[in-house]
Length: 376
Image (cartoon, rainbow, N blue to C red; front, side):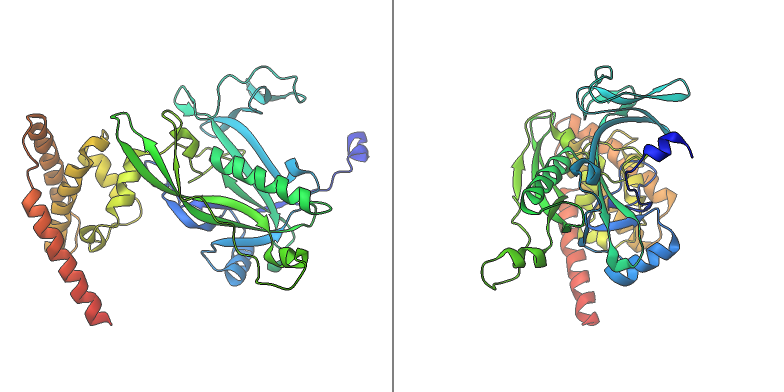
């Protein structure tokens, strides 16, 4: 028997599923934020049990914590990735793991070299992400194994750790403590380079003791515990929007998936998807993001967002008139309109399509209302 294995008494279960907050990534930019949990990288048997028990889009997940040690249940590291490789992992002050050539060097706590960059900072073409991995057992699935809920948001990391510390102060041991993790919408006022503020809604993570456990703590029988109230608006100081970096696809060992901060293109797409003209046209997953990048030549400026919305409306009108078929010619015309319009805007002219845009919005709203009336 290998000596180190004889001395190893820690209990471990296999990881059988990754749970994510965001949609799969399109070709460019992050996946859009979801208001539910998405199962990823799971065996078909595990996925079937997930769908049968929780449904395909659960907004909360109840399970039990597998370990007594808080850091085993919730690991939080600053990490830098390049391609499929983890370059280094640190605790915010010193490195824990570092890639040296083709091998990893592991350091004892507090003995590694200083961490070269903080979470949210860019290093070359990459960015340091604060990755949290919350581990849960889901016994209701009747499959023994660990599910990891992943996030690359520093705000999620702080919130989950604070929640876990409260739970630890309430229960005798964290191991087998029944908990519920859920999503809650939260608005952030993010300062932009042009001095304006962009309001961004993110569905953040929260952890609480399972409601049935809380009921048992009450001195008298009462109303089942409700999800804790969540702050609805937070203003972020200038330069700290990187805290919102979301785990559309958080990296993991042996895999690299970019974890950008708030992406102006993603913010535009999220708003544009709610417009009547866009709703009336079928944009496949990621196609609207690709459209924005094509029309703006990969140089979208939020200051021109209103004008790009007008160009998009004209494009949607052309697609609708063409039997809801997207064509290269329409996309090229939209690109030409955008470039021409920017030149006009730079010459301090008013927007080119203002009156037409307003009239088109009213027409599309009326068409949608008629269609919904017929459906009912």
